Amino acid sequence: MSPQLKSDTPYVLPAGAGTPMSWFSSSMARKASSPGLGFTECFMSPGDEPPLHVLKNEDEWFYILEGEMSFHVGGETHKGTAGAFVSFPRGIPHTFTVESPSARFLLMNTPGGFERMFELAPKTIEEAVRALEAFDIKVVGPHPRRGPA
Image 1 (cartoon, rainbow, N blue to C red):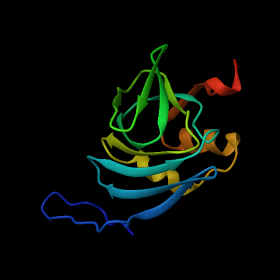
Image 2: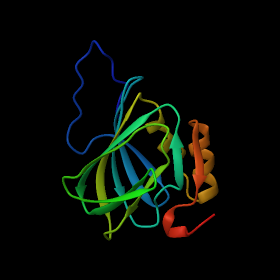
Image 3: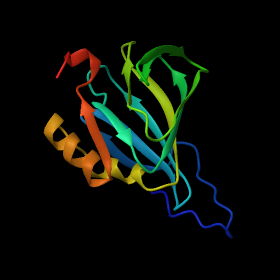
Image 4: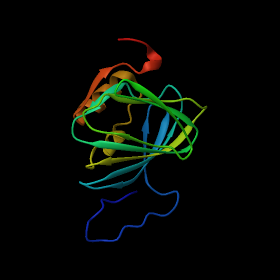
């Protein structure tokens, strides 16, 4: 488990540790959570990506550890492989596509909070939309691989 971060206490999480969570058939491990920061390691397969959405309150950063991904943000698409770093500022529609058989990436959000959305473990698009909306994230379209709305 990953305890709540505190600003006045050191925090160390051993390799392989974290709170297990899921999104469709993909697995997540929450590494850290605090009011100021959320940090999740994601192991994702193609087809498990979120619909096009807008974060009202948070900024997101992705760092690809393994695999190839496309990042759809603000009407543009950017490709990334291991070592790529991508920023999704709040208020801009975005999503991503796993292009390789799988991808492992780090997801950081500030302020913290929405990393706990993965605790809801959605298995369907409808459950994913409800999970996103529960964290004040607005779905504005389908994922690009699903075609136009």
